[in-house]
Picture 1 (tube, rainbow, N blue to C red):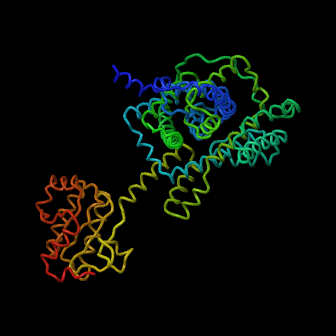
Picture 2: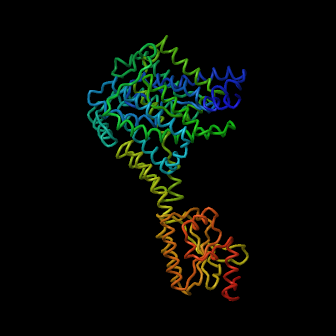
Picture 3: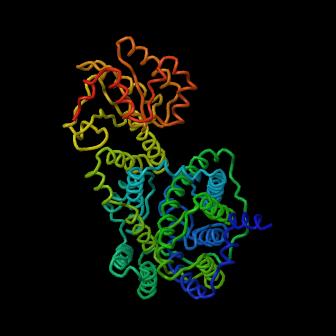
Amino acid sequence: MGDAVTAIGRRVPVIAAARHYERAWLPKDIVAGLVLTALLVPQGMAYAELAGLPAITGLYTSIMCLLAYAVFGPSRILVLGPDSSLGPMIAATILPLVGADGDPAKAIALASMLAILVAVFMIGAGVAKLGFVADLFSKPTQIGYMNGLALTILVGQLPKLFGFSIDADGFIEELRGFVKGVGDGKTVGAALAVGLGGLIVIVGLGRVLPKVPAVLVAVVTAIAITVAFDLGAHGVSLVGTLPQGFPPLTLPGVPLRDMGLLVAGALGITLVSLTDTISTSSAFAARTGQEVDANQEMIGIGTANLAAGFFQGFPVSTSGSRTAVAEQAGAKSQLTGIVGALAIIAMLLFVPGLMRNLPQPVLASVVIAASLSLADIPATRRLWNQRRMEFGVSMTAFAGVALLGVLPGIGIAVAISILNVFRRMWRPYRAELAPVEGIDGYHDLEAHPEGARIPGLVIFRFDAPLVFANSRTFRDEIRALAASEPRPVWILIAAEPITDVDTTAADMLEDLDEELNAAGVSLVFAEMKSPVQRKIERYELTRTIDPAHFFHTLDDAVEAFAAQHGPAATEAP
Protein backbone atom coordinates (compact mmCIF):
# COMPACT_ATOMS: atom_id res chain seq x y z
CA MET A 1 0.00 0.00 0.00
CA GLY A 2 2.80 2.37 0.95
CA ASP A 3 4.61 1.68 -2.34
CA ALA A 4 1.43 2.42 -4.30
CA VAL A 5 1.00 5.77 -2.53
CA THR A 6 4.63 6.63 -3.21
CA ALA A 7 4.22 5.76 -6.90
CA ILE A 8 1.10 7.92 -7.17
CA GLY A 9 2.93 10.72 -5.37
CA ARG A 10 5.69 10.61 -7.97
CA ARG A 11 3.18 10.92 -10.83
CA VAL A 12 0.96 13.46 -9.00
CA PRO A 13 3.44 15.67 -7.10
CA VAL A 14 0.71 17.84 -5.57
CA ILE A 15 -0.02 15.00 -3.13
CA ALA A 16 3.47 15.07 -1.67
CA ALA A 17 3.52 18.88 -1.81
CA ALA A 18 0.29 19.08 0.24
CA ARG A 19 1.62 16.63 2.84
CA HIS A 20 4.79 18.66 3.35
CA TYR A 21 3.27 22.14 3.05
CA GLU A 22 4.18 24.49 5.90
CA ARG A 23 1.57 26.90 7.26
CA ALA A 24 4.14 29.72 7.40
CA TRP A 25 4.37 29.59 3.59
CA LEU A 26 0.70 30.53 3.03
CA PRO A 27 0.93 34.36 3.27
CA LYS A 28 4.09 34.36 1.15
CA ASP A 29 2.48 32.24 -1.56
CA ILE A 30 -0.65 34.44 -1.61
CA VAL A 31 1.36 37.66 -1.93
CA ALA A 32 3.64 36.13 -4.58
CA GLY A 33 0.57 34.91 -6.52
CA LEU A 34 -0.98 38.39 -6.57
CA VAL A 35 2.31 39.97 -7.63
CA LEU A 36 2.65 37.34 -10.36
CA THR A 37 -0.88 38.12 -11.63
CA ALA A 38 0.21 41.67 -12.39
CA LEU A 39 2.76 40.20 -14.83
CA LEU A 40 0.67 37.29 -16.12
CA VAL A 41 -2.23 39.40 -17.42
CA PRO A 42 -0.41 41.83 -19.75
CA GLN A 43 2.17 39.27 -20.86
CA GLY A 44 -0.48 36.64 -21.51
CA MET A 45 -2.45 39.05 -23.67
CA ALA A 46 0.63 40.28 -25.50
CA TYR A 47 1.97 36.80 -26.25
CA ALA A 48 -1.46 35.67 -27.46
CA GLU A 49 -1.43 38.44 -30.05
CA LEU A 50 2.17 37.54 -30.92
CA ALA A 51 0.83 34.05 -31.72
CA GLY A 52 -1.83 35.57 -33.99
CA LEU A 53 -4.68 34.96 -31.52
CA PRO A 54 -7.19 37.15 -29.62
CA ALA A 55 -5.72 38.60 -26.42
CA ILE A 56 -8.29 36.86 -24.22
CA THR A 57 -6.91 33.43 -25.14
CA GLY A 58 -3.68 34.34 -23.38
CA LEU A 59 -5.62 34.64 -20.12
CA TYR A 60 -7.47 31.36 -20.64
CA THR A 61 -4.13 29.70 -21.33
CA SER A 62 -2.47 31.21 -18.26
CA ILE A 63 -5.24 30.01 -15.97
CA MET A 64 -5.35 26.41 -17.17
CA CYS A 65 -1.62 25.80 -17.43
CA LEU A 66 -1.01 27.17 -13.92
CA LEU A 67 -3.70 24.96 -12.40
CA ALA A 68 -2.61 21.80 -14.27
CA TYR A 69 1.09 22.26 -13.53
CA ALA A 70 0.31 22.81 -9.85
CA VAL A 71 -1.07 19.27 -9.80
CA PHE A 72 1.40 17.41 -12.04
CA GLY A 73 4.52 19.59 -12.05
CA PRO A 74 7.43 18.53 -9.80
CA SER A 75 9.04 21.95 -9.33
CA ARG A 76 8.05 23.98 -6.29
CA ILE A 77 8.13 27.43 -7.88
CA LEU A 78 8.45 27.00 -11.67
CA VAL A 79 5.91 29.24 -13.45
CA LEU A 80 4.34 28.30 -16.77
CA GLY A 81 2.47 30.40 -19.28
CA PRO A 82 2.41 31.85 -22.78
CA ASP A 83 5.97 32.36 -23.94
CA SER A 84 7.61 34.84 -26.30
CA SER A 85 9.80 32.13 -27.87
CA LEU A 86 6.77 29.97 -28.74
CA GLY A 87 4.56 32.78 -30.07
CA PRO A 88 6.18 33.03 -33.50
CA MET A 89 6.20 29.23 -33.82
CA ILE A 90 2.48 29.06 -33.06
CA ALA A 91 1.77 31.84 -35.56
CA ALA A 92 3.93 30.18 -38.23
CA THR A 93 1.96 26.96 -37.76
CA ILE A 94 -1.64 28.20 -37.63
CA LEU A 95 -1.70 31.35 -39.77
CA PRO A 96 -1.12 29.53 -43.10
CA LEU A 97 -4.07 27.28 -42.19
CA VAL A 98 -6.37 30.11 -41.11
CA GLY A 99 -6.24 31.64 -44.58
CA ALA A 100 -6.79 35.14 -45.83
CA ASP A 101 -10.10 35.63 -44.00
CA GLY A 102 -8.32 35.42 -40.62
CA ASP A 103 -11.24 33.77 -38.82
CA PRO A 104 -10.45 34.09 -35.06
CA ALA A 105 -12.57 31.03 -34.16
CA LYS A 106 -10.63 28.85 -36.60
CA ALA A 107 -7.32 30.23 -35.33
CA ILE A 108 -8.32 29.39 -31.74
CA ALA A 109 -9.35 25.85 -32.71
CA LEU A 110 -6.04 25.27 -34.53
CA ALA A 111 -4.01 26.67 -31.65
CA SER A 112 -5.92 24.52 -29.15
CA MET A 113 -5.31 21.38 -31.21
CA LEU A 114 -1.66 22.39 -31.45
CA ALA A 115 -1.51 22.53 -27.64
CA ILE A 116 -3.10 19.08 -27.37
CA LEU A 117 -0.54 17.65 -29.83
CA VAL A 118 2.29 19.23 -27.85
CA ALA A 119 0.78 17.63 -24.74
CA VAL A 120 0.72 14.21 -26.40
CA PHE A 121 4.36 14.49 -27.44
CA MET A 122 5.45 15.86 -24.07
CA ILE A 123 3.63 13.28 -21.96
CA GLY A 124 4.74 10.49 -24.28
CA ALA A 125 8.35 11.64 -24.04
CA GLY A 126 8.09 11.85 -20.25
CA VAL A 127 6.62 8.35 -19.90
CA ALA A 128 9.25 6.97 -22.30
CA LYS A 129 12.00 8.83 -20.40
CA LEU A 130 13.18 10.74 -23.47
CA GLY A 131 14.46 13.82 -21.66
CA PHE A 132 17.78 13.41 -23.46
CA VAL A 133 16.06 14.65 -26.66
CA ALA A 134 16.72 18.18 -25.40
CA ASP A 135 20.39 17.52 -26.08
CA LEU A 136 19.65 17.70 -29.83
CA PHE A 137 19.60 21.47 -29.36
CA SER A 138 23.26 22.36 -28.69
CA LYS A 139 24.10 25.57 -26.85
CA PRO A 140 25.60 27.41 -29.87
CA THR A 141 22.60 26.37 -31.97
CA GLN A 142 20.23 27.52 -29.23
CA ILE A 143 22.00 30.89 -29.01
CA GLY A 144 21.72 31.41 -32.77
CA TYR A 145 18.10 30.28 -32.85
CA MET A 146 17.11 32.59 -30.00
CA ASN A 147 18.98 35.54 -31.56
CA GLY A 148 17.13 34.95 -34.83
CA LEU A 149 13.86 34.63 -32.97
CA ALA A 150 14.51 37.88 -31.09
CA LEU A 151 15.12 39.76 -34.35
CA THR A 152 12.04 38.22 -35.99
CA ILE A 153 9.81 39.16 -33.03
CA LEU A 154 11.24 42.69 -32.87
CA VAL A 155 10.60 43.43 -36.54
CA GLY A 156 7.15 41.83 -36.40
CA GLN A 157 6.09 44.10 -33.50
CA LEU A 158 7.42 47.39 -34.90
CA PRO A 159 4.30 48.22 -36.96
CA LYS A 160 2.05 47.78 -33.89
CA LEU A 161 4.44 49.95 -31.86
CA PHE A 162 4.16 52.66 -34.54
CA GLY A 163 0.37 52.44 -34.59
CA PHE A 164 -0.35 50.72 -37.91
CA SER A 165 -0.60 47.20 -39.31
CA ILE A 166 0.84 45.47 -42.37
CA ASP A 167 -0.07 42.36 -44.35
CA ALA A 168 3.24 40.52 -44.63
CA ASP A 169 4.74 37.14 -43.83
CA GLY A 170 8.38 36.49 -43.01
CA PHE A 171 11.21 38.64 -41.71
CA ILE A 172 12.18 40.29 -45.02
CA GLU A 173 8.60 41.07 -46.05
CA GLU A 174 7.71 42.38 -42.59
CA LEU A 175 10.79 44.61 -42.54
CA ARG A 176 10.01 45.90 -46.01
CA GLY A 177 6.36 46.48 -45.07
CA PHE A 178 7.34 48.36 -41.92
CA VAL A 179 9.77 50.63 -43.75
CA LYS A 180 7.18 51.30 -46.45
CA GLY A 181 4.49 52.06 -43.84
CA VAL A 182 6.73 54.56 -42.09
CA GLY A 183 7.67 56.09 -45.45
CA ASP A 184 4.02 56.40 -46.42
CA GLY A 185 3.28 58.36 -43.23
CA LYS A 186 1.17 55.68 -41.49
CA THR A 187 2.82 56.25 -38.11
CA VAL A 188 0.40 57.36 -35.38
CA GLY A 189 2.33 59.79 -33.20
CA ALA A 190 0.33 59.16 -30.03
CA ALA A 191 0.69 55.39 -30.47
CA LEU A 192 4.45 55.64 -30.95
CA ALA A 193 4.79 57.93 -27.94
CA VAL A 194 2.89 55.67 -25.56
CA GLY A 195 4.51 52.52 -26.96
CA LEU A 196 8.06 53.86 -26.73
CA GLY A 197 7.30 55.20 -23.28
CA GLY A 198 6.16 51.77 -22.17
CA LEU A 199 9.27 50.15 -23.64
CA ILE A 200 11.55 52.64 -21.87
CA VAL A 201 9.77 52.01 -18.56
CA ILE A 202 9.95 48.21 -18.91
CA VAL A 203 13.60 48.07 -19.98
CA GLY A 204 14.87 50.96 -17.89
CA LEU A 205 13.05 50.11 -14.68
CA GLY A 206 13.99 46.46 -15.09
CA ARG A 207 17.66 47.41 -15.04
CA VAL A 208 17.61 50.14 -12.41
CA LEU A 209 15.06 48.61 -9.99
CA PRO A 210 14.79 44.91 -10.95
CA LYS A 211 12.54 44.06 -7.99
CA VAL A 212 9.86 46.52 -9.14
CA PRO A 213 7.27 44.93 -11.52
CA ALA A 214 8.19 47.09 -14.53
CA VAL A 215 5.50 45.63 -16.80
CA LEU A 216 2.79 46.45 -14.25
CA VAL A 217 4.10 50.01 -13.89
CA ALA A 218 4.11 50.46 -17.68
CA VAL A 219 0.59 49.04 -18.06
CA VAL A 220 -0.97 51.09 -15.24
CA THR A 221 0.75 54.28 -16.43
CA ALA A 222 -0.36 53.71 -20.03
CA ILE A 223 -3.96 53.11 -19.01
CA ALA A 224 -3.93 56.29 -16.91
CA ILE A 225 -2.48 58.33 -19.79
CA THR A 226 -5.01 56.84 -22.21
CA VAL A 227 -7.91 57.85 -19.98
CA ALA A 228 -6.48 61.31 -19.24
CA PHE A 229 -5.74 62.25 -22.87
CA ASP A 230 -8.38 60.11 -24.61
CA LEU A 231 -5.77 58.41 -26.79
CA GLY A 232 -8.44 56.24 -28.38
CA ALA A 233 -9.79 59.36 -30.09
CA HIS A 234 -6.30 60.12 -31.41
CA GLY A 235 -5.94 56.94 -33.43
CA VAL A 236 -4.43 54.68 -30.77
CA SER A 237 -5.78 51.12 -30.89
CA LEU A 238 -6.96 49.82 -27.51
CA VAL A 239 -7.48 46.30 -26.15
CA GLY A 240 -11.14 46.92 -25.35
CA THR A 241 -13.40 45.07 -22.93
CA LEU A 242 -12.58 41.38 -22.60
CA PRO A 243 -15.30 38.69 -22.83
CA GLN A 244 -16.81 38.03 -19.42
CA GLY A 245 -16.60 34.59 -17.84
CA PHE A 246 -14.72 31.46 -18.73
CA PRO A 247 -14.95 29.21 -21.82
CA PRO A 248 -16.49 25.72 -21.56
CA LEU A 249 -14.55 22.50 -21.98
CA THR A 250 -14.14 22.22 -25.76
CA LEU A 251 -12.61 19.60 -28.04
CA PRO A 252 -11.26 21.66 -30.96
CA GLY A 253 -12.57 20.61 -34.34
CA VAL A 254 -9.81 20.61 -36.95
CA PRO A 255 -9.98 19.18 -40.50
CA LEU A 256 -7.77 16.15 -41.07
CA ARG A 257 -5.99 17.93 -43.92
CA ASP A 258 -4.59 20.49 -41.44
CA MET A 259 -3.07 17.91 -39.10
CA GLY A 260 0.18 17.48 -41.02
CA LEU A 261 1.38 21.04 -40.45
CA LEU A 262 0.06 21.00 -36.88
CA VAL A 263 2.05 17.84 -36.09
CA ALA A 264 5.22 19.36 -37.58
CA GLY A 265 4.71 22.56 -35.59
CA ALA A 266 3.97 20.60 -32.41
CA LEU A 267 7.22 18.66 -32.74
CA GLY A 268 9.21 21.88 -33.07
CA ILE A 269 7.40 23.51 -30.15
CA THR A 270 7.93 20.39 -28.02
CA LEU A 271 11.68 20.47 -28.65
CA VAL A 272 12.03 24.18 -27.85
CA SER A 273 9.77 23.92 -24.80
CA LEU A 274 11.60 20.82 -23.55
CA THR A 275 15.00 22.47 -23.88
CA ASP A 276 13.79 25.63 -22.14
CA THR A 277 12.09 23.63 -19.39
CA ILE A 278 15.13 21.51 -18.55
CA SER A 279 17.49 24.50 -18.44
CA THR A 280 15.11 26.73 -16.45
CA SER A 281 14.07 24.06 -13.95
CA SER A 282 17.71 23.06 -13.43
CA ALA A 283 18.71 26.66 -12.70
CA PHE A 284 15.98 27.25 -10.13
CA ALA A 285 16.25 23.77 -8.59
CA ALA A 286 19.93 24.46 -7.88
CA ARG A 287 18.93 27.54 -5.87
CA THR A 288 16.39 25.68 -3.74
CA GLY A 289 18.33 22.43 -3.34
CA GLN A 290 15.84 20.40 -5.37
CA GLU A 291 16.67 17.61 -7.80
CA VAL A 292 15.33 17.99 -11.34
CA ASP A 293 13.09 15.14 -12.51
CA ALA A 294 13.27 15.81 -16.26
CA ASN A 295 10.77 13.12 -17.20
CA GLN A 296 8.17 14.30 -14.65
CA GLU A 297 8.78 17.89 -15.82
CA MET A 298 7.76 16.78 -19.31
CA ILE A 299 4.62 15.17 -17.93
CA GLY A 300 3.85 18.36 -15.97
CA ILE A 301 4.35 20.58 -19.02
CA GLY A 302 2.34 18.12 -21.10
CA THR A 303 -0.67 18.20 -18.76
CA ALA A 304 -0.47 22.00 -18.68
CA ASN A 305 -0.68 22.08 -22.48
CA LEU A 306 -3.49 19.53 -22.44
CA ALA A 307 -5.54 21.65 -20.04
CA ALA A 308 -4.92 24.77 -22.12
CA GLY A 309 -5.91 22.96 -25.31
CA PHE A 310 -9.30 21.96 -23.95
CA PHE A 311 -10.15 25.53 -22.88
CA GLN A 312 -9.37 27.60 -25.99
CA GLY A 313 -5.70 27.97 -25.09
CA PHE A 314 -2.44 27.48 -26.96
CA PRO A 315 0.97 25.84 -26.28
CA VAL A 316 2.88 27.00 -23.22
CA SER A 317 6.32 26.60 -21.71
CA THR A 318 8.22 27.59 -18.62
CA SER A 319 9.11 31.22 -18.08
CA GLY A 320 12.41 32.15 -16.48
CA SER A 321 11.37 35.79 -16.01
CA ARG A 322 8.02 34.99 -14.38
CA THR A 323 9.61 32.30 -12.21
CA ALA A 324 12.20 34.85 -11.07
CA VAL A 325 9.42 37.30 -10.18
CA ALA A 326 7.64 34.62 -8.15
CA GLU A 327 10.86 33.72 -6.36
CA GLN A 328 11.66 37.35 -5.55
CA ALA A 329 8.12 37.82 -4.24
CA GLY A 330 8.64 34.97 -1.79
CA ALA A 331 6.94 32.02 -3.53
CA LYS A 332 7.39 28.74 -1.66
CA SER A 333 5.14 26.35 -3.61
CA GLN A 334 2.83 25.93 -6.59
CA LEU A 335 0.10 27.57 -4.51
CA THR A 336 1.55 30.77 -5.95
CA GLY A 337 0.42 29.71 -9.43
CA ILE A 338 -3.00 28.64 -8.14
CA VAL A 339 -3.48 32.09 -6.54
CA GLY A 340 -2.44 33.74 -9.82
CA ALA A 341 -4.92 31.63 -11.79
CA LEU A 342 -7.77 32.39 -9.37
CA ALA A 343 -6.99 36.11 -9.51
CA ILE A 344 -7.24 36.08 -13.33
CA ILE A 345 -10.54 34.17 -13.11
CA ALA A 346 -11.85 36.77 -10.67
CA MET A 347 -10.90 39.55 -13.08
CA LEU A 348 -12.70 37.85 -15.98
CA LEU A 349 -15.82 37.24 -13.90
CA PHE A 350 -16.14 40.57 -12.10
CA VAL A 351 -14.06 43.25 -13.89
CA PRO A 352 -13.62 42.18 -17.55
CA GLY A 353 -13.29 45.82 -18.55
CA LEU A 354 -10.23 46.41 -16.37
CA MET A 355 -7.88 46.36 -19.38
CA ARG A 356 -10.17 48.04 -21.92
CA ASN A 357 -8.05 51.22 -22.06
CA LEU A 358 -4.73 49.43 -22.44
CA PRO A 359 -3.07 50.64 -25.70
CA GLN A 360 -2.05 47.96 -28.19
CA PRO A 361 1.38 49.66 -28.67
CA VAL A 362 2.09 48.98 -25.00
CA LEU A 363 1.41 45.27 -25.56
CA ALA A 364 3.90 45.52 -28.43
CA SER A 365 6.43 47.07 -26.04
CA VAL A 366 5.93 44.13 -23.64
CA VAL A 367 6.71 41.69 -26.46
CA ILE A 368 9.67 43.72 -27.72
CA ALA A 369 11.15 43.85 -24.22
CA ALA A 370 10.77 40.07 -24.01
CA SER A 371 12.45 39.64 -27.41
CA LEU A 372 15.43 41.69 -26.23
CA SER A 373 15.84 39.30 -23.30
CA LEU A 374 15.91 36.34 -25.70
CA ALA A 375 18.94 37.67 -27.57
CA ASP A 376 22.34 36.80 -26.12
CA ILE A 377 24.94 38.98 -27.83
CA PRO A 378 27.68 38.42 -25.17
CA ALA A 379 27.40 34.66 -25.67
CA THR A 380 27.67 35.13 -29.44
CA ARG A 381 30.77 37.28 -28.96
CA ARG A 382 32.22 34.63 -26.66
CA LEU A 383 31.71 31.97 -29.33
CA TRP A 384 33.58 34.17 -31.83
CA ASN A 385 36.49 34.59 -29.44
CA GLN A 386 36.65 31.01 -28.20
CA ARG A 387 35.64 28.77 -31.09
CA ARG A 388 34.95 30.02 -34.61
CA MET A 389 33.37 26.76 -35.75
CA GLU A 390 30.75 27.00 -32.98
CA PHE A 391 30.20 30.64 -33.95
CA GLY A 392 29.55 29.54 -37.53
CA VAL A 393 27.03 26.96 -36.32
CA SER A 394 25.27 29.63 -34.24
CA MET A 395 25.13 32.12 -37.12
CA THR A 396 23.77 29.47 -39.49
CA ALA A 397 20.92 28.79 -37.06
CA PHE A 398 20.38 32.56 -36.74
CA ALA A 399 20.20 33.01 -40.52
CA GLY A 400 17.87 30.02 -40.86
CA VAL A 401 15.33 31.55 -38.46
CA ALA A 402 15.63 35.11 -39.77
CA LEU A 403 15.56 34.31 -43.48
CA LEU A 404 13.53 31.10 -43.81
CA GLY A 405 11.11 31.41 -40.90
CA VAL A 406 10.68 29.99 -37.42
CA LEU A 407 9.66 26.41 -38.25
CA PRO A 408 12.25 25.84 -41.01
CA GLY A 409 14.71 27.60 -38.72
CA ILE A 410 14.29 25.12 -35.90
CA GLY A 411 14.63 22.25 -38.35
CA ILE A 412 17.88 23.76 -39.60
CA ALA A 413 19.03 24.34 -36.01
CA VAL A 414 18.48 20.70 -35.03
CA ALA A 415 20.07 19.46 -38.26
CA ILE A 416 23.12 21.64 -37.63
CA SER A 417 23.48 20.28 -34.11
CA ILE A 418 23.33 16.69 -35.34
CA LEU A 419 25.71 17.36 -38.24
CA ASN A 420 28.14 19.03 -35.84
CA VAL A 421 28.17 15.85 -33.75
CA PHE A 422 28.86 13.78 -36.87
CA ARG A 423 31.58 16.22 -37.91
CA ARG A 424 33.37 15.73 -34.60
CA MET A 425 32.95 11.97 -34.83
CA TRP A 426 34.06 11.91 -38.46
CA ARG A 427 37.26 13.87 -37.77
CA PRO A 428 37.97 13.37 -34.05
CA TYR A 429 41.14 14.48 -32.37
CA ARG A 430 44.06 12.15 -33.10
CA ALA A 431 47.45 12.14 -31.43
CA GLU A 432 50.77 10.34 -31.53
CA LEU A 433 52.04 9.68 -28.01
CA ALA A 434 55.54 9.33 -26.60
CA PRO A 435 57.29 9.36 -23.21
CA VAL A 436 58.37 12.80 -21.96
CA GLU A 437 61.30 13.25 -19.60
CA GLY A 438 60.15 14.12 -16.08
CA ILE A 439 56.47 13.29 -16.68
CA ASP A 440 54.91 9.92 -16.04
CA GLY A 441 53.02 8.20 -18.83
CA TYR A 442 52.80 8.88 -22.56
CA HIS A 443 51.87 12.28 -23.94
CA ASP A 444 50.69 14.05 -27.08
CA LEU A 445 53.73 14.98 -29.21
CA GLU A 446 51.91 18.05 -30.51
CA ALA A 447 51.66 19.40 -26.94
CA HIS A 448 55.09 18.01 -25.97
CA PRO A 449 57.38 18.13 -29.03
CA GLU A 450 60.29 17.33 -26.72
CA GLY A 451 58.94 13.79 -26.26
CA ALA A 452 61.14 10.97 -27.55
CA ARG A 453 59.63 8.31 -29.81
CA ILE A 454 60.46 4.70 -29.02
CA PRO A 455 62.34 3.25 -32.01
CA GLY A 456 60.15 0.83 -33.96
CA LEU A 457 57.01 1.66 -31.95
CA VAL A 458 54.33 4.21 -32.77
CA ILE A 459 51.71 4.91 -30.06
CA PHE A 460 48.52 6.34 -31.54
CA ARG A 461 45.36 7.64 -29.80
CA PHE A 462 41.98 8.09 -31.52
CA ASP A 463 39.55 10.11 -29.40
CA ALA A 464 36.18 8.74 -30.53
CA PRO A 465 34.13 5.57 -30.92
CA LEU A 466 35.26 3.69 -34.02
CA VAL A 467 32.20 3.61 -36.28
CA PHE A 468 31.19 3.77 -39.92
CA ALA A 469 31.53 7.57 -40.04
CA ASN A 470 35.21 7.65 -39.06
CA SER A 471 36.55 4.20 -39.95
CA ARG A 472 38.10 5.56 -43.16
CA THR A 473 39.76 8.39 -41.20
CA PHE A 474 41.22 5.86 -38.73
CA ARG A 475 42.43 3.60 -41.56
CA ASP A 476 44.11 6.47 -43.43
CA GLU A 477 45.89 7.66 -40.26
CA ILE A 478 47.23 4.16 -39.54
CA ARG A 479 48.37 3.72 -43.15
CA ALA A 480 50.24 7.03 -42.99
CA LEU A 481 51.94 6.00 -39.75
CA ALA A 482 52.89 2.60 -41.21
CA ALA A 483 54.47 4.29 -44.24
CA SER A 484 56.40 6.86 -42.18
CA GLU A 485 60.19 6.75 -41.75
CA PRO A 486 61.69 5.08 -39.88
CA ARG A 487 59.23 2.25 -40.49
CA PRO A 488 57.49 1.08 -37.29
CA VAL A 489 57.35 -2.56 -36.24
CA TRP A 490 54.33 -2.06 -33.98
CA ILE A 491 51.51 0.47 -34.17
CA LEU A 492 50.11 0.56 -30.65
CA ILE A 493 46.57 1.94 -30.31
CA ALA A 494 45.87 3.68 -26.97
CA ALA A 495 42.27 2.46 -27.08
CA GLU A 496 40.77 3.89 -23.89
CA PRO A 497 38.85 6.69 -25.74
CA ILE A 498 37.41 4.16 -28.20
CA THR A 499 34.09 3.40 -26.53
CA ASP A 500 32.55 1.41 -29.37
CA VAL A 501 33.41 -0.51 -32.53
CA ASP A 502 30.60 -1.12 -35.02
CA THR A 503 30.50 -3.76 -37.77
CA THR A 504 31.76 -1.37 -40.47
CA ALA A 505 34.78 -0.49 -38.35
CA ALA A 506 35.30 -4.19 -37.51
CA ASP A 507 35.52 -5.09 -41.19
CA MET A 508 37.95 -2.21 -41.70
CA LEU A 509 40.15 -3.42 -38.82
CA GLU A 510 40.26 -6.93 -40.25
CA ASP A 511 41.35 -5.70 -43.69
CA LEU A 512 43.79 -3.19 -42.18
CA ASP A 513 45.42 -5.81 -39.95
CA GLU A 514 45.99 -8.14 -42.90
CA GLU A 515 47.42 -5.24 -44.92
CA LEU A 516 49.80 -4.26 -42.12
CA ASN A 517 50.88 -7.85 -41.49
CA ALA A 518 51.83 -8.12 -45.15
CA ALA A 519 54.03 -5.05 -44.70
CA GLY A 520 55.64 -6.46 -41.53
CA VAL A 521 53.78 -4.18 -39.13
CA SER A 522 51.69 -5.38 -36.17
CA LEU A 523 48.51 -3.64 -35.03
CA VAL A 524 48.40 -3.72 -31.22
CA PHE A 525 45.83 -2.46 -28.69
CA ALA A 526 46.14 -1.35 -25.06
CA GLU A 527 43.64 -0.11 -22.47
CA MET A 528 40.66 -1.26 -24.52
CA LYS A 529 37.47 -1.25 -22.46
CA SER A 530 36.04 -4.68 -21.66
CA PRO A 531 32.69 -4.13 -23.46
CA VAL A 532 34.56 -3.09 -26.61
CA GLN A 533 36.94 -6.05 -26.38
CA ARG A 534 33.95 -8.40 -26.06
CA LYS A 535 32.58 -6.93 -29.30
CA ILE A 536 35.95 -7.52 -30.95
CA GLU A 537 35.76 -11.16 -29.91
CA ARG A 538 32.14 -11.45 -31.07
CA TYR A 539 33.15 -10.04 -34.47
CA GLU A 540 35.83 -12.81 -34.55
CA LEU A 541 38.56 -10.26 -35.25
CA THR A 542 40.97 -12.31 -33.17
CA ARG A 543 41.21 -14.63 -36.19
CA THR A 544 43.39 -11.99 -37.84
CA ILE A 545 44.48 -9.77 -34.94
CA ASP A 546 46.70 -11.80 -32.64
CA PRO A 547 44.96 -12.21 -29.24
CA ALA A 548 48.39 -11.64 -27.67
CA HIS A 549 48.31 -8.10 -29.12
CA PHE A 550 45.75 -6.88 -26.58
CA PHE A 551 47.26 -5.42 -23.38
CA HIS A 552 45.75 -4.03 -20.20
CA THR A 553 47.99 -0.95 -20.09
CA LEU A 554 50.33 1.00 -22.36
CA ASP A 555 53.22 0.12 -20.04
CA ASP A 556 52.47 -3.59 -20.47
CA ALA A 557 52.46 -3.19 -24.24
CA VAL A 558 55.72 -1.20 -24.28
CA GLU A 559 57.42 -3.79 -22.06
CA ALA A 560 56.23 -6.61 -24.35
CA PHE A 561 57.55 -4.71 -27.37
CA ALA A 562 60.90 -4.23 -25.68
CA ALA A 563 61.07 -7.92 -24.74
CA GLN A 564 60.45 -8.94 -28.36
CA HIS A 565 62.59 -6.39 -30.14
CA GLY A 566 65.58 -5.92 -27.89
CA PRO A 567 67.00 -3.34 -25.47
CA ALA A 568 67.36 -0.66 -28.15
CA ALA A 569 63.61 -0.33 -28.24
CA THR A 570 63.52 0.87 -24.62
CA GLU A 571 66.00 3.71 -25.11
CA ALA A 572 63.87 6.64 -24.11
CA PRO A 573 64.41 9.42 -21.60
